[in-house]
Length: 210
Ligand code: B1M
Image (tube, rainbow, N blue to C red; front, side, top):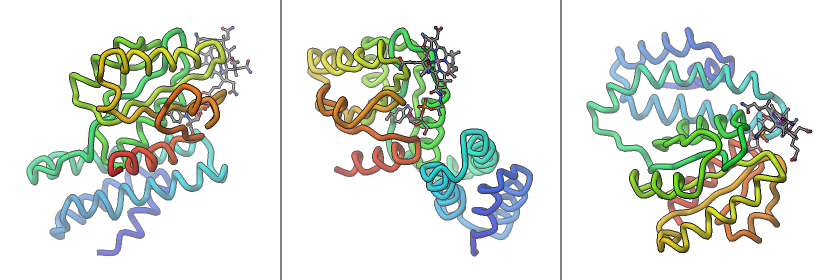
């Protein structure tokens, strides 16, 4: 099956279209994992590309994500039946004393769209919470978001906490948020910095395979 129409429906943010195409593809015997990878994930990659190039903005991305999630809901039971595992577990959160989560939520959605199981710790997340969630869920990726110059420095405390616990080498720690930079990420010893949600998902997948 050619999944162009499904990818276009994701780009258009048409949940109704996505639902109809996914349902009919399943009825025609298409494999759920193929509909997921060739249709939903590839469609979200294209959305991510447009978003990174500032050709679309947050509202459009959120509509596409909603359409993609509609397709995912239909596929989930089929994927479970075929025992398709997530590519890995990622813990994400906005750091302590910071309540900004629009960007964090976009990153969480893009990670999900790339096949990760995402444990979203929410906002105002402490080092202890990041650490205990990472251990509890055997996460390979920890993503921290910060939007304030006064809270981004807390990311270093989180990294130090992972080191002190001896768990630092078991995870790849990624950071992001408007006031951040690659230089800052290097200074605090993060494994990766990305400037937007789409590249965060891509980089997480690369780190998983490194
Ligand atoms: Co606040 N706020 N805010 N704010 N707010 C900013 C960030 C600010 C820049 C506005 C300004 O003054 N110009 C300023 C921070 C200044 C500074 O320190 N640099 C600021 C301030 C001062 C405040 C308060 C202190 C205001 C006050 O109460 N006095 C207060 C702080 C509350 C707190 O956090 N403790 C505050 C509160 C708020 C609201 C809660 C009202 C609201 C947030 C609502 C919410 O998130 N649920 C809010 C908002 C909306 C903003 C602005 C307008 C928009 C931020 C946003 O969501 N951008 C913002 C001004 C601005 O930036 N225009 C501002 C859109 C979002 C998609 O971008 O989060 O950067 P962003 O995410 C991007 C990338 O950064 C990246 O991917 C995303 C999408 O591509 N990314 C990651 C993000 N996280 C990542 C993690 C990764 C990877 C990539 O991990 C691997």
